[in-house]
Length: 223
Image 1 (cartoon, rainbow, N blue to C red):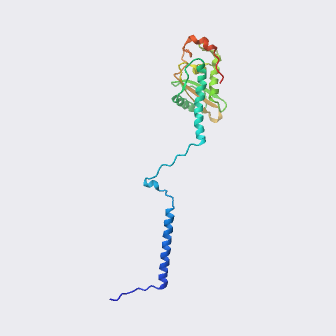
Image 2: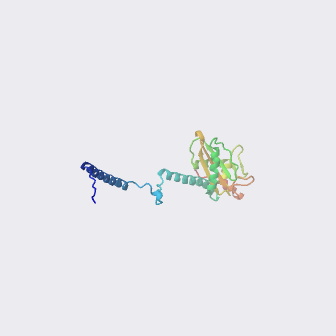
């Protein structure tokens, strides 16, 4: 049986060889490019690890430090006055601070010194400049000592002294404060909440009335 042979023109055979070589070269290049391609689809295979957390920035750290300083300064300013007359130092309480902040948020539009009439003792402050540090605020309250008569347990006529008596109220041992800027640059609003509350009618901030004479002679430290 005769075998039929199909003969290709030499030009066609040469073209097929060249095409094969080009195809192999293109395939090799594609494989090379694929091997160097970043593997962005690892998550699809369930092998991805979480993105590394960046370290906190200097600004974020400073904010935390500022917050800690804010708390420390408020507590220290209260306790300098309390310890000086033999009362238990106050401790910062975040529940009180949260309550104070929520009320301050409601007042930043007008910054009026309106009390919340909540379950805690309360001191309010407003100042026209946009920054007041805690020591300045507490000193403003403590300056009312001049208008308080411990023997009669009353304020001088026409003057306020309730902020002072709340700061030094013997049974108030927890404090939490908030400080917010008023809208439209109208100053700063500050509120401190106290637990247990003070300034009960017919009760004395110093508790033991036998110490009234000694208390009235003690000068508050400069803040």
